[in-house]
Length: 277
Ligand code: DGL
Image (cartoon, rainbow, N blue to C red; front, side, top):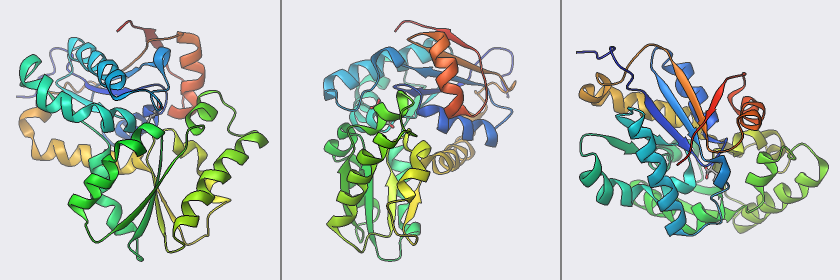
């Protein structure tokens, strides 16, 4: 039975704005579905925070989204997916909500990377949290052990995007530095995973510093494909999601700022509400 009588949206969580690039693609591909977006802007960025802090913050957000009726929550944040997802799935869910699901963005990305590379040498750009967690290395090793993977942490990039400084000349210094560091590790790299949901906004600048044959793998399409595949394989979950085409936006910080900056990521204006975790 398709339960449309009460709101049971898909929850989409990010530390801040970046997950809006993922939500945007979800909405494009699943326009009938209800979604709730939660950005923890008050505590963003998560990238340099400890495992314990990211786990604690992410769990609070997941519980809040469950409280808003979400049967399914997507952690549209690589840092949360890297540092919190496994504990939430294995330890917390069985206790707090055994019938609900939380999924991340790293596994779907790791599952598809192989099809983008001919040389079998791939690079990953991400926050220090994501890179140091080794989550991409672990997942790719499990799924595509024939690939050789090189990583580069980009500590400044999220702040450049969140502060709307990425189109200014100073930003290029940091972007160039990390991209060149990565490519210097192995000139055979022919595909680079943008392992952070903020990075799609930097694509034009990143391209200035990579050879034209190197593919940039952005997560929005990959994660949307993966969600659709999941819903097809899990009709019992699909039937629980309400489908009135409603989207709600929540931020833990200033509404005005979130609506203004967030519209750059979501690529259209929206209204948000403040929420405490
Ligand atoms: N969008 C988050 C990610 O994908 C940014 C992390 C942060 O807040 O530093 O990793």
